[in-house]
Length: 365
Image 1: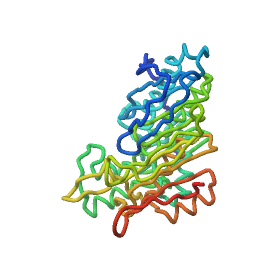
Image 2 (image 1 turned 90 degrees about the horizontal axis):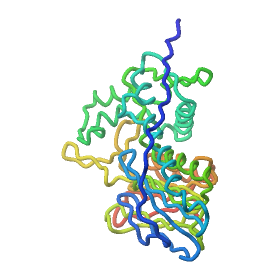
Image 3 (image 1 turned 60 degrees about the horizontal axis):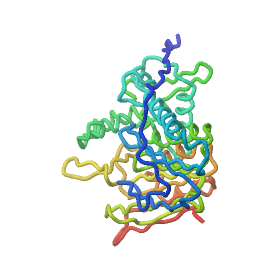
Image 4 (image 1 turned 180 degrees about the vertical axis):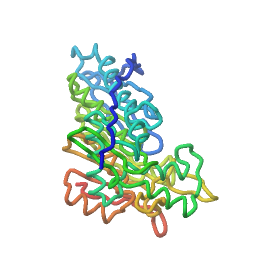
């Protein structure tokens, strides 16, 4: 049998931006609130020792924020804006290649070629698909970047919730599964075997973007920084001056203005996921926007999960990705996973049988 033709996808550089700083200040912002997922309580360094500068940028349908810290008088203080712009350029470049909303992106081309031919992609895209397939195996199929047909079926892409028929669900499920994704490392190609399959990296993209941005900061000599990707992912480089770390407050799943738990991070990444904020209204019911790709149905047993990753070459990617199988597989699976992965910690909040929800710490000292 003749093998299908291979399609080439070229990498396009992101356009240069000037970026923008929002104020130069000596002390941290205190009690800054990140909506939806968590609120951040930021300690104050000594005003005489460090300069902190914050930059924001819109990407991936959310706001990214980078706060850089350098000793007062360090020559880097004159270049912080340019360093932050370069980090945001890395985020933009990633979005340009990963977004399935952009017809010219590498992921859109792979999706368009589903069931037709393998698509040659950049090495880091092939690596990301490989990483996703490895985590699919580790998570017993709960983490699956081919979940796109289910998201489309339930109306998540258009934010118009709908409950599918049994036949529609069966048809969509037939197009989901990393076992239908063929990766050829020698040729540098990715092939989705069934027509209608859709890769969707929305469950991992912001964490990966933080890792890319952090690599740029490190290359430019930054050792202390706090990076936020919207309201669900945060990466801490080092720790605040004169402090042990940043304290992150986890939002209460029932009350937006309250927190249910907190954790301190330093040289770590933290991501959260929850059945709130982005829930769907469909058929007179409120359903969670997180789906079990193995059944095609929304999850019902978990409210919130937070994952903390340390000692990893891509902590943001790993923390962002792991929130999904933890939400889907629940506390027991999470305990087993953390036991065999000592660099992974978690806070899980299951749906209570009665009363208030209670957080459980897993592998947190």
